[in-house]
Length: 69
Image (cartoon, rainbow, N blue to C red; front, side, top):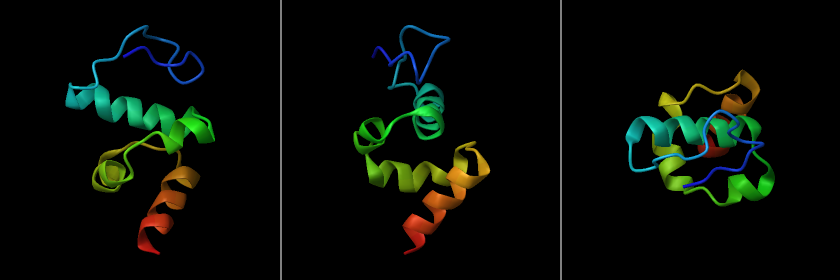
């Protein structure tokens, strides 16, 4: 897939079938994406992978609270 440049500026293509790249892309979207980008994510996949993602602390806390509610 071709990521939006404001989310990923270091690569022109991402293999979202590669688990490492998929997690990295999710991190980028959550840290730098816009609302429209976040709404395109699979929320269930995000819930499962959240503990493994390296997010900015306020963003991580927001998602932890969201899933705890």
